Image 1 (tube, one colour):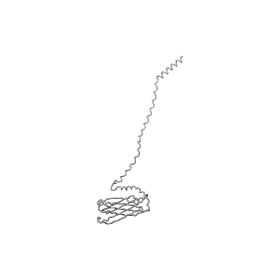
Image 2 (tube, rainbow, N blue to C red):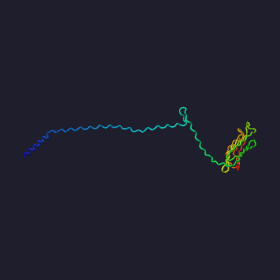
Image 3 (cartoon, rainbow, N blue to C red):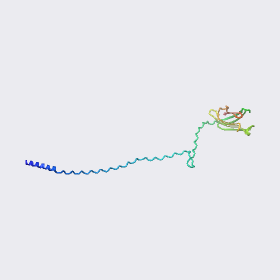
Image 4 (cartoon, one colour):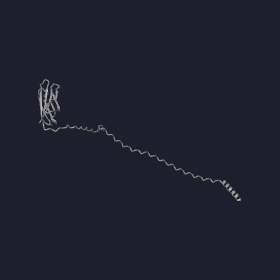
Length: 214
């Protein structure tokens, strides 16, 4: 019993001493680690620019524009003529054509006159007649004339295409010029021209006949 009491007293004394003893100061907290310095922001790269476009070629100067100084642009060549479609041709035939040109002059106070020129030509061959003469009353003695140029072409159907140029009368006075290209039937006479002189009222009539000789 005494041991128990002694043990209790010792426990109480120990507890009292423990309560009165000052508590040991707590260890100071370790200083916080400094924060790492903020990373410096890199400057943003400027956007990549597209390469500059090449300069445009200068527009060509107008062909007719004058150059600086005394130089001038050379003139443009003239445009090429449009090709003409050739006329279909018929081979020449081995025949002769007799061509009769009759010029009749009537009217007014003078009597009727009749002049004739005849040519014998092969198919697609040209020929001419030149006839001159003097008559009373002509201006400055100029000769009267009958000039004929002819070119016959026998077509497939037997008709004759005839090119005729006629000069009749006094040059510079009572003068008549005719140029025709009719299509004639062989041996048939047709009137291809008829005109009236404006000063003398004389009428000039031109007749053509083409006869194919076989």
